Image 1 (tube, one colour):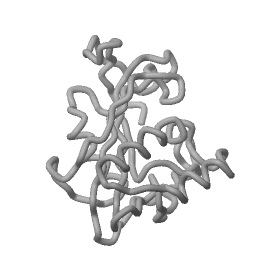
Image 2 (cartoon, helix red, strand yellow; image 1 turned 180 degrees about the vertical axis):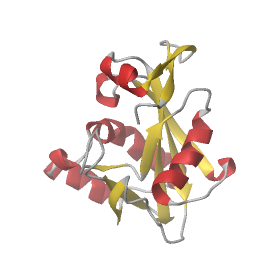
Image 3 (tube, one colour; image 1 turned 135 degrees about the vertical axis):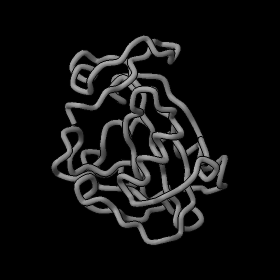
Length: 176
């Protein structure tokens, strides 16, 4: 983990230099990340509960998979990589639908985030080093759980959820 190198970016999401994961987080530098929501059936979405060994947001619910964009990597390539690393899903660029982008803020850990949807009906074989469990929910169920138990969700997911909800409604026609 301490050998991970990220692109540090400016407020226009242009690369200005590289830094280690530790430095990026310690110094609150702007960097890039991806989140992916996997849909196993219409209007149903997979959330993951992060492994207890994760240094950020352990044992909390979040998007199906997520991760940092490595230095020199494109967002879409990071999304493909994270699907494979965390969920065992081998996919291609054309199956990932970008639904929104956000600028860095405190809630996302100063990350520029690109959020993707992926329709995938096969069994998920998640990586137990990364993920404790996965579970299928509707957008309405996720919304209710966040309202009742926000402490069970990562701060970044809570921040991104309204954008996700709107993107899902626009792209999939799914209502809560």
